[in-house]
Length: 187
Image (cartoon, rainbow, N blue to C red; front, side):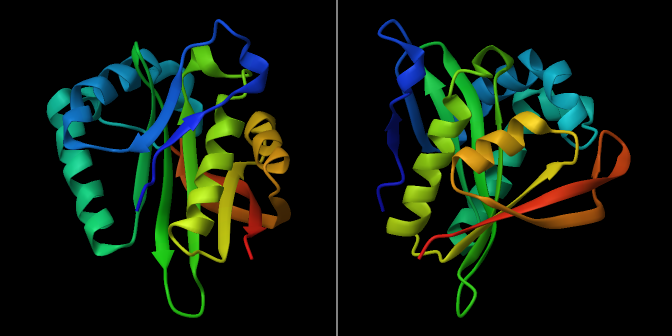
């Protein structure tokens, strides 16, 4: 499986840094810890409450080992978006189910400095392509907080359709919050 893509962000212009979407590696612990520390405030409203250890290299090493175990089991694929300056995002297909379902859940975040520049849309398009071509999935589901208009725009731009509301779906920022559910049928 290839599972790596250069991201061509049309709106970024000629001077934009080269962006690469590639599989997560154990050697990413330091870069991922730095990215999470840099974006701690930016991501806090959109993620579960994180213990301080999560933002350390040791904490990220443990998270990455767990994620790589899930990859080996075939139930999850995680990618990082990198530039010459380091990691600027993470994209995940989790809960991969084979058999008659061929489904996964999409999750993602991008660095605060990359928001509004097409990075998330470009990476989602690449993940959708790999989910279809390399992973053979039929459907991807995504959920956003009801008030996360930016993420909903990314999903709609990427061909996802809204399919409903899930009350008290996930515990985000310390509270059980409603989410808008989206899906994309791949074939």
